[in-house]
Length: 340
Image (cartoon, rainbow, N blue to C red; front, side):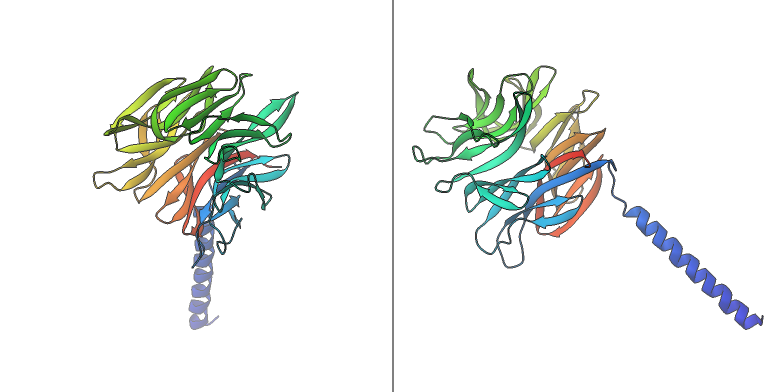
């Protein structure tokens, strides 16, 4: 082989090897973290170009719009998979609704409200889907807290006071139905049939978690009209993180070791917000950009946190970020289960 041809041949081999190496490295850096046996469902909202905010969800990273923003505004607040169907909770045109495999079901056609989320409730050894939030009725148009068995359509709870109220969490693992909510701007622990414990002024309450025979939920708590603190309730006792007006919490849960994990948003000295988790009350900032964390799920030792960085929905798996690549969006809820 002539020297000139040999040089060209060797150069060609080098280029091919370089391209192959780059492709291999590229695929490795784009691998999605998390449990490969898990199916990740995420609910959220996006704003289509020249339209209004609309509900959507992502399944294993694939985007599924529920509305197109061309008619009325809609929002997604919760998501679950039940009996092979995907349910998303939210509102459409200010009315409480859920989407079942993308088909909208309005809970109350005539009065404002929203569905905040879902839970599973055992009825005669069967797990029934429960939805909860707030809705008006002909008797009282003010949105009021309610919980409903979607299978039987039975109302499990409805607040009868002439006060604005809502349910944000539901749990019946102990045999008694407990709920976290807000009644007349008061964080409230509700025990169905056993009363309502109003715990203090709050503008935000998180989902209810059950751990070691106690109930927990996050809260943005007003100590008095001029002081606010983020923390969480352990049954009826408020536990503050001790940072007045510098953070807010949105969700909490316990991992298999019993470690308390909290998700929310903290603020730096320039008042820029950052998605943050707390493990045993010790904070870790998940993003140094403007960001926030809305909800979490723990599955097979993986901690999933959903939210937003800048203007794009994203989630973190064990503190490693995954973008959902949908412009003008935010992730608000997550449900992780075994793949079918």
